[in-house]
Length: 321
Image 1 (spheres, helix red, strand yellow):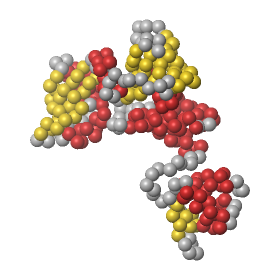
Image 2 (tube, one colour; image 1 turned 60 degrees about the vertical axis):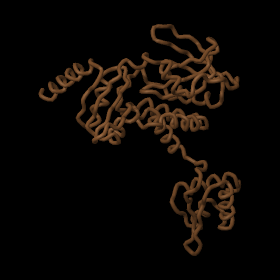
Image 3 (cartoon, helix red, strand yellow; image 1 turned 180 degrees about the horizontal axis):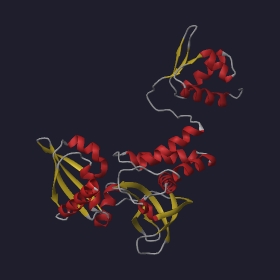
Image 4 (spheres, helix red, strand yellow; image 1 turned 90 degrees about the horizontal axis):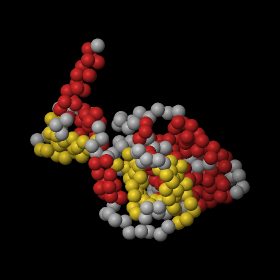
């Protein structure tokens, strides 16, 4: 391999694939002398990759932990696996991971060849997600829509998409996308609607075929402290039909780990905690309280008591049938 740039990338890929390489073996893989290998290793170090070397007859090279994460070189299978994993993380219950996963997925998809995008889409389409929240099919967001909108937010590019609010016909909207917000079990886009001349909140499961216009826009003054607070204020009761509050006989820490970001958990003293679940149906609130794995007492709303009794009767009948 004579091209130094291509050889450097190949060297990086080999170092990432194995914990330790003897020098002669690594030079043989690259088809170069040990002296040329040393120069290539020095080039990697100049680029910020912490390559450690051991001298002697059995000397060799290994990638060491660094102060910052340098770019990674992935083969086709690794790139597909990473993309699918990021899609799953974007819909997962771990607090703070959804937005980060979408940003990482957008970066990956942007540089992914078309053949790999097709593999990712085929694998996603043929895989049944095992999420534990009761997100219905009509709430699901196409990962392609997520990544396209995330890239538009990052690149401050005006975007056109179709939007169909409930009970209304689909319309074409031209928007300056500002931020993506994961709230509850749904994704929202906050942006300046050029057709309405105002800030708007769009549910991503109702949005289709986003495409950039190529026009870049300048910053506008945002009317709230942050995008998440703005979405909560705007959607209000449209998202939350029920606010369920309960006392759980377990410490706040373990309960918070079990419920994740789907509820607010506060310490209530003496080994107990208070749980507040904002939900659009009582089944979801009952599930959230059930997965705490501890006894609980519902404080509100009054509808929750009869709902839990009906659920208990249904489960008892199923267990005894």
